[in-house]
Length: 181
Image (tube, rainbow, N blue to C red; front, side, top):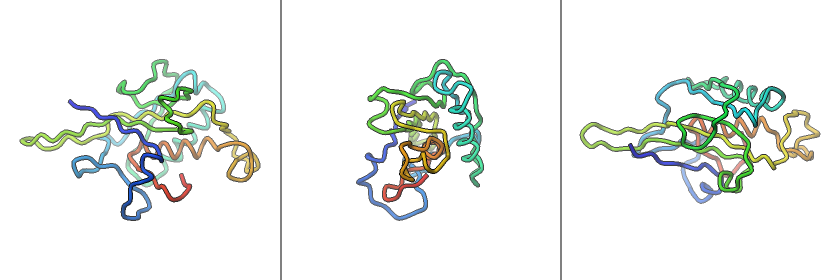
């Protein structure tokens, strides 16, 4: 089966014009990319998200995403010791690798199948989503407004960044004209 990697970054979408919607989705062969199951497990790196405030912040972010009206949900799995792209698992971790981060403070990578079997129909499905956060980005798990850069503080809010990236893992695209989750 052919697998393709789609890197989600705002810069990649900045030049794409389209009809205005509250959200966008990704398509292949004129079909929406979807997961085949309504629940996918997000595995947390044991190094990046040990027990403590960072794990709690990611838990809270996933819980908030799961409160959406969508029928899709993420379950959680802790202490993954074998994280990586294109390994058949949905994972979250911090990285300092510029080749993985592509200049973004956080990025989501998808693996998906996009095959047109002329006799048997199309195979269009998401197969993996990996969420990577830049370890050098000044994140905070605090939700105190005075600490957050959007309110004049020094730190990027981790939870809203995680919710944004998890939206990509859901299969949602980018809006490139507003700052939003």
